[in-house]
Length: 262
Length: 262
DNA sequence: AAATGCGGTTCCACTATGTGAAACTACAGA
DNA sequence: TCTGTAGTTTCACATAGTGGAACCGCATTT
Picture 1 (cartoon, rainbow over the protein chains, first blue to last red):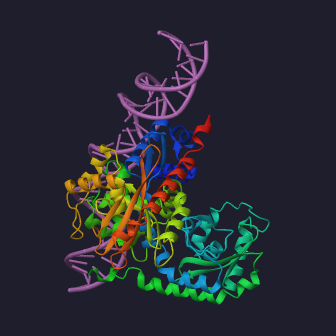
Picture 2: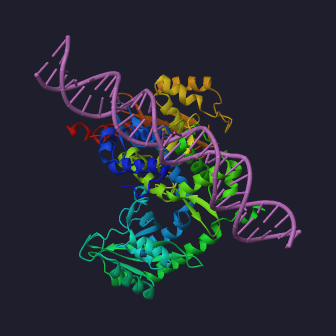
Picture 3: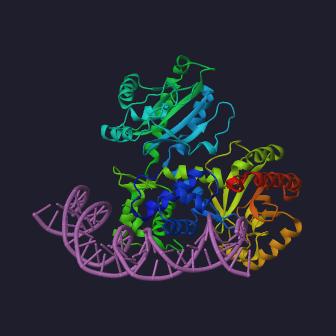
């Protein structure tokens, strides 16, 4: 599970992630089974995390669960270093104009993180969706971002994909995806042709700043039952405009104070 | 800032919190100014956090900001150990029935953390609100929860309040608050009489399980311009019912698997 | 009642990890 | 070129973390 758990902090975070992966309160012994750390070490890490309120321990049931302090920290993270707060009004507008599900995503490590969402049916941007992660190689947003990544970064991301075949359409090797990325650059936008989930299709565009750096991506998603890629194509100008607006907005927002510190 | 930063993990988290407190991308030197750690140590901690993707470093501007990995972890925390996902349908209903702003909060350390919200005006449960923290001693939800805390825990929470006078109505010492908590227990619900913010009032009830343990609290909030405490009082039965429903729901939800492991 | 087994906690000699003053580098402005 | 400031690296040193093993407490078995 844990990639490079050097240092105590790394180990602690690996354990935290381990607890998270259970998606429910979990006993010491269950963790011990999955963890690579010896009993005493694991125990101490859990103690530390609990004392730091990253985990909470329920003495009644003898279980650990994720601590609410994380929710606070994440709130700060979301507010200050995700595109979501900046993009919100534009997301709203795009959602209204298209009437379809709209995602805002960013790239982290080699995964896609959805930082905001507008739902077509239930018109609530659900907290429960922000924070969700997805694979980069078989989602519209993932491919849209990868297509505009500098070579060295792209290589790193590609190397870490799982290439799991979710559907018949999933691209399962680097060569296929690289070809696709070229096509995306030519076309200017990415598709998800039921590559991650059968029946689910989307059009996605990257959000890039003036210097061309990829900040994130937006997608308009729907199902093959309701629409087709051709129909979604009509939204491209709208999405592009939204992406531009968000990118422009970031220029003003990011570090306006920095130059003033003198 | 940092309370008990024993161990490397504690120090790292203190730094993380420090970065969060700036609410914007921050330079090394700015952090150094606020931090108690020597240059080299701080530097290494930042490196570690960055490598662990809890922070992200922007080489262009030389600034650190909160990492998106936190958003993922928090997603897990929110889903599995907050009341929010369980309470969601009941929150929806309460919001609809009252037409006022509804909060769902939990106690952490000595603070109130809002884990969900329904807004009266903009009817979107905003991610940006979940994760917000507030003082316990001068909010309806905070007092509602404290009123039903076991003595030892209560003492701990009280000891950590700031007793800052936000408004004329703020209770600024333990004695006053303890008297209020007695009144709350007698009455069965708590009020916020413009104690935190002028013009803002609310009624709050704790969410308690069968054994009486405090799980969280719900409140219905409004402004003195629109309504009065007397009017909010009419919502009490509705809120109580909601709290009961949520508490009942947790019984089924929490650790159903635990007993089966045999 | 004693024995067994199991989840959880503590001990302690050992050493990996983190520490931080100081030296150094890169760069901007004088 | 010189000087100062922000950021990075070094290295002798010691703290902090490690983990095998022993221990505890409780439930179940004999």
